[in-house]
Image (cartoon, rainbow, N blue to C red):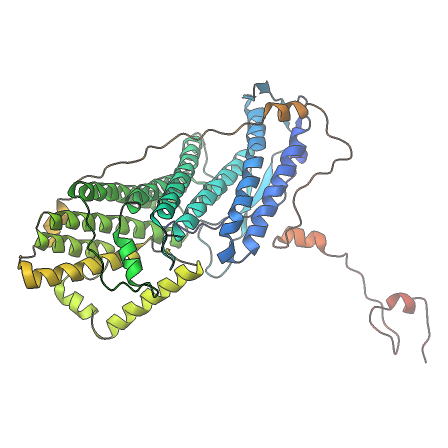
Length: 483
C-alpha cells in the first residue's frame, strides 16, 4: 500500500539569466527548454482528476528523464567535472533563484502550501530528483492497486504487477539514498523540510520497507482469499484451506520484521525533522504496525502447521495488538456484536469503495486489510480449537518478546546519474540560433507572480455621458453628444 505522494509544482526559470558557457553556449538554453516541459507536465498532472493521474505518470517520467541529464551537465560545469568526456566551462552570472511548492512540509489544513523560494542549482537538483522518486513510488502504487480490485487478477498478472512494483520501489530507494549521501556535504540545511537530510533518509528507509514487504505479498495467498470472500461475483461458498510450508512461513515472518525495522528507522528520522506533514508520519507508523502484524500472523501460521493451534491463536492476538485492534477474548466478543459490528462493516465497505474508485485507498499502509486477514484466521482457529483441539491459549506478550530478528531481502543499489549523449554535447558547442526562443512553460495561473504579469495596466476611468454604455469610453472622450 504505497504512500500517495503529491507531485510538486514549480515556477518558471530561465537558465540563460544565471549561467553562460564559453565552451557550450547552447547548454543554458537547452536546459531551460527541457525544464519548461517538466513544468508543464507537472501542472497538467495536478489538474487532472485523481483517478486519472496514474495514467499520466509516464508523461511526467519521460519529461523528467529528458531534463535530468541537462541538470547534471550544468552541475558538472559548476563543479569542474567532465560530462560525457568533455569539460564544460560554465560561469555563474548571478545566484540562481527558483520556487517550488512543497508537498511534505506541514501546512494549514484545507489550504495549498505556498511556494518556497530556494537558491542554488543544488536545490533545483534535489527537488527534481525527489520528484522522480515520487513518480516511481506512485507507479508502484498503481501496479499494486490491480491486486485489490473487484476483478481478481490471474497468478501471472499478480506476479507481473508485484515484480514491476518492486523494481520501481528500488529505483526510488536508490534516488533517495543518493540524495542523502549528497546532502551530507551541505554546511547548512535547506529552507524546506522536503529536501532535508532527515526527510530524505526517512524516505529511503520507507521505500526499502515497502520493497521488502511486497516480496512477501507475492507468495502470500491469504489477502487473495479475503478479497475473494468479499467479492460479490464469487459463487464459491467453500474453498480449500491455504497451505504454506513451515520454512516459508517463518521466512516470511523475518522479512516482515525487517520491513518493520526499516519503518521504525524512518519514523525515528522524521522525529528529528521540522514541520513534516502529519499524513506521512501516520503512514509510516501504520506501515510499521502492518509489517509487525504480518510477522505475527506468519509466526502463528508456523505454529499452527506444527500442530500448536493454541500458540497460533496467541500469535494472532498479538498481531491484532500490534495493529492497534482488540486483543482479548472479551474485547473480540464485544467488537463482534451490536453497533461495533455495524461500524466495522461500514468501514470495510468504505475502504472497498475507495479501492473501487482508486482514490484515497491504502492510506493506512494496509493495516485495515491485514486486520481482515487476521480476523478471518482467528475466527477459524478459535472455532476449531473450541470444538476439536482444546489447547490452552498462552499469553501473547512473552511470544512478542521472543520474536526473531528480521532478514533483509534487498540491498540498496547505487543511483547512476544520467549523462547527455555525446552527439547532444557536440551540438551544444555552437551558439544558439538567434531565432530560437526560450521555452519556460506556459504561464502558471496558480502563481501570484504570473498573475501580476497577466494583469492589464490600470486605466483611470473616464466619466460616461448620459445614455452611454460601458466600454464606449473612447467615443465619449471625443465629446460625443447624445439626445
